[in-house]
Length: 130
Image (tube, rainbow, N blue to C red; front, side, top):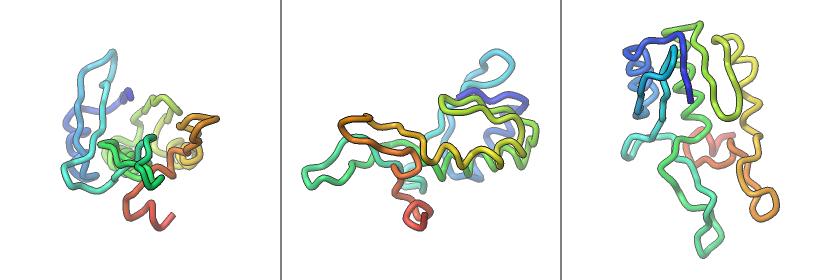
């Protein structure tokens, strides 16, 4: 994803507060950012592959709730930040709060073989409560 109108130090502070790990590199007027789980950290995402018992396998990705937490932490430090993701664009914290719920039900799995919605590929404590 691309994040603009934010400093690298603000991104680092937000990542620490959200308990995720970032890989950042300058890109244009902002940063290209990859968000990953901390070892044994929260925000466990499930993958597309299934185990022999039919349950989805865990992957090293951050779940929907983890991305939401990271973005909220960024907006706490930089309310005018702009996020450009593969799914959606957020122009500031108000736009984020108005639209982020839409991405929970975005189809990310195979339409025919094994449909999956982004928000449901989750094994974090918030995901179980959703």
